[in-house]
Length: 175
Image (cartoon, rainbow, N blue to C red; front, side):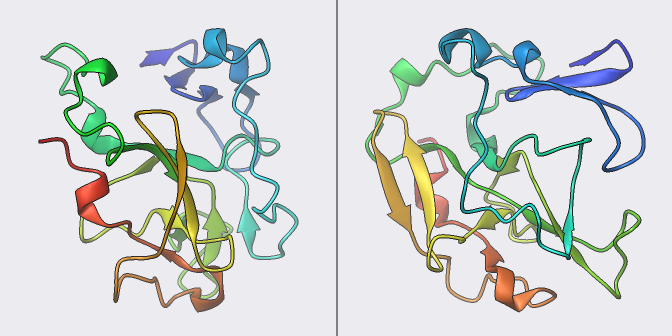
């Protein structure tokens, strides 16, 4: 949702503007009221000091992605997680990042790793980050956290040592 020169996401408000210099306010995120006033924490396994890392905001903002399949189109009411038929098999959040080649200072040479805010089943998007020994952590709708391997052949070869790829579609789709 656009507001006050920025956009509100599930993790907070992110100002529009230059990459790496945008203001960030976690208290405006949809999850903030449920997190004891702390906001979405950053993953300690995501190396924000990596030379090829490109910040989205003025500092680390997020490192997890929301399951885009759980987002309802704007014309429909939001999906109620209590109505998910297979909550133990449906991920709501997962480790996320993307390889950026299109926003300075990133380019095709050099590509950069950056935070990303969703994971999806789109075969053209590698947005899951397998940063825990080449596995990703995923939080499921029933509250448990599991370890996931990348979907075969999905790793983005522009930064092969960063293990950015896709999750299995069956843990993202909602029947």
